[in-house]
Length: 155
Image (cartoon, rainbow, N blue to C red; front, side, top):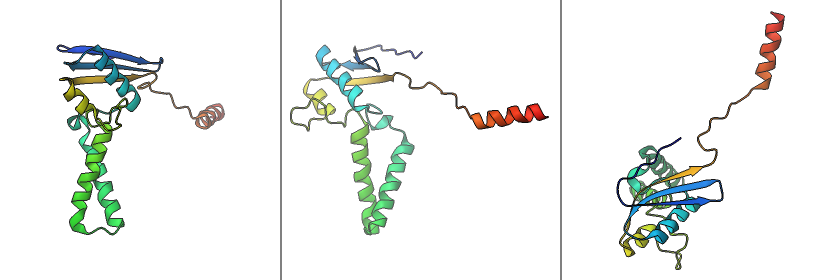
């Protein structure tokens, strides 16, 4: 079991079917905003609220891949860092809650950050729970098991 603690602001919850649950801690706004953002989290599965919560190793991996692709594409060395910055920026928009385009945005462009700003609200934290996630599955190797049984019987 995981414990979720909040000391300030509002707590919103959302259950999508019976497979995905979201807890959202936010300040400002109203219950409808909390539910909409919780629903967005269930649909878009962001890794963190903002870039500070993304694993630096993932960011560095994206940067290295972008540089390598640009080199293979024949881009000049002087441009590689700028290309990598753009790629990392795009990656962060895709994996951070504030950078993602709101799933219910009428114009298809409004980000969660813009939505929150327009409502005078902010997200403190969120946690998404997926049924079966985090459960370790026992890996069974029947061939090895049979070989061990035969070896034990012979030996």
